[in-house]
Amino acid sequence: MADAEIGIIGGSGLYKMPGLSRVKEVEVTTPFGKPSDAYALGVLEGRRVAFLARHGRGHRWMPSELNYRANIYGLKKLGVERIISVSAVGSLKDDLRPSDMLLPLQFFDRTKARPSTFFGGGIAAHISFAEPVCRVVVDALDKGCSEAGVVHHVGGTYLCIEGPAFSTIAESNAYRAWGMDVVGMTNLQEAKLAREAEICYATLAMVTDYDCWHPEHAAVTVTQVIECLTRNVENAQKIIRTAVRNMPRERQCKCGSALAHAFITDPKIIPASAKKRLGLLVKKYLK
Image (tube, rainbow, N blue to C red):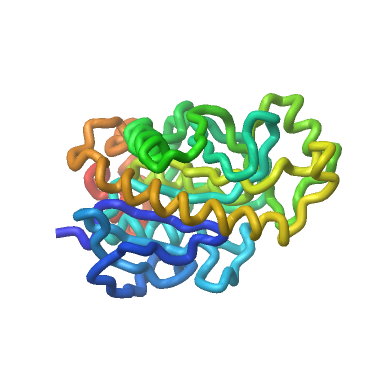
């Protein structure tokens, strides 16, 4: 039996998961190095869960420093089939107010030099990423928001920037002109890697501020973000508990076969080292 079936990645402010019982911490080794922290394995609402503090407990790692590949590979190694990822974001729309929640259905990449794939080194694969989140997980989070009485929105685009600096006013206004909804620094890589790992993925985006475009927010400060996060995190925990409880036990979405038609390299020339390194991901397709 797998150690866990549902993974929770906690973002800024969410470094532990209240309600998790029978907890044990597990260090996971991966071909891509060490994850951000130990995984907390336990039971939440009757389901086996693995919790990871994305930035490490105490918030040690900046977005550009995160080992995204190790974090997702570690969840795959623990048996996780679905991921709920929590992320603090800035709003680019008037109607997405601080303390609201957004369940984005799209991502836009503005990062510069982060590894976003497990592949390479003799094996090429191209996943479909037109619909980057799993609607089954989104629906569970939608229900969780409703039951918690939290103002939330389904849809829209999460724009992922490199950071760690917040946006300039010029950038913020450009993102608004493009039709983006929220801006964050972490979830694009997670979504791509989860798809390659054939794990369902969705983001619970906690709106902490209006970014710097808003006339009442000439600048974004960590102090502002933390104040709003404190209010948001308790709501996020309620939402996650309900979403976990209501998550279907059987997967019928396409996420579990995302690699079925992704490989372009002739299997006869794939190095044994590549097959070994990625065996957890490719063994059912490449003998």
